[in-house]
Length: 355
Ligand code: ATP
Ligand code: MG
Image 1 (tube, rainbow, N blue to C red):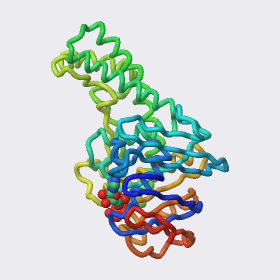
Image 2 (image 1 turned 45 degrees about the vertical axis):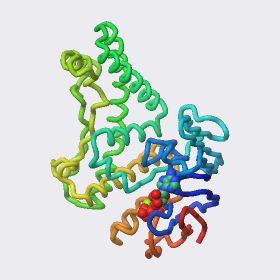
Image 3 (image 1 turned 120 degrees about the vertical axis):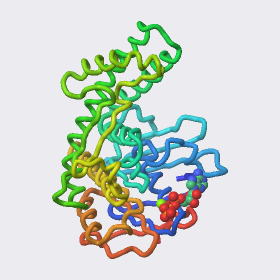
Image 4 (image 1 turned 90 degrees about the vertical axis):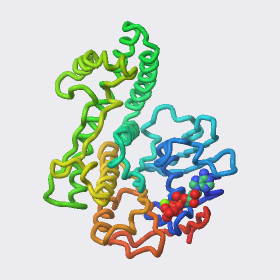
């Protein structure tokens, strides 16, 4: 990689087991994992502004990654130039749609992921939309189309366009929105059993843990299309007054509850962090189940915070999934059984090399 955040240059070959990134604060550990995540999934785990990723004083950044995915080698390349669209290539070709054979399966937990639990609804929608798009390319197309239509419709409402014109976009929103809502609900059904199981093992056994999809202004039970159309009719006056679209999946939310109480309101920091981690681990399990493949796992800033019991639990969960990356600021703590073999990379001032 080249000129990626504070990493001027790094070139490494990594073993297919545990990789420990060791270095003090602000040396580049998270940056290194961010680059891997970006090359694998096409989005940064912590920012939507590509320009932030380029080293200060440089005009472009690049990442090249060679990956063995289920016995097939392929190359990934990312080039970032502020002001231009990011280039993301697989074996030299732009990734149009997300091809099944040429996917790098990877999940990552980063400290900022706690915002999925405690942040505004948009954080949870972004998480689920990205997770579903990753395993289901057609879903991503619906999301893109929905966003374009929504923008158009909001402009029409602001311009006080005629009802006939607005209703064309309303129908389009209903049609694409339906796929998004169904995709999210289906994904939730796959994810929830893993989530419940892992969270309860990590934290409070014998607790009642719930996940609920909440529709933005429309009824979820029954015929979705009819319900959306009905909600649009009910909101017509208000939409005209506020000049924006008030019904649809762009206003939905996912609600996590513990003992029937909203996590976002009542959860402690520790509980929220555990739930964010459980989400990412469940995402991994869903990929393993659906794609029948190994998954690369990135765990940033987590290891040192966990007590030995939870550490053991976490490592049991990721054992046998494939390559695992963790970060530590100090000495590598005693590793759980099965994890005695690892490579340490020293990270200092943006330099990453085998220790
Ligand atoms: P911690 O243990 O505190 O999490 P870290 O090793 O994970 O530390 P990073 O988040 O990787 O640290 O950040 C390392 C440094 O990179 C920070 O000091 C940050 O200011 C710097 N940095 C971030 N973006 C850029 C950029 N675009 N160009 C240059 N440096 C950057
Ligand atoms: Mg960090």
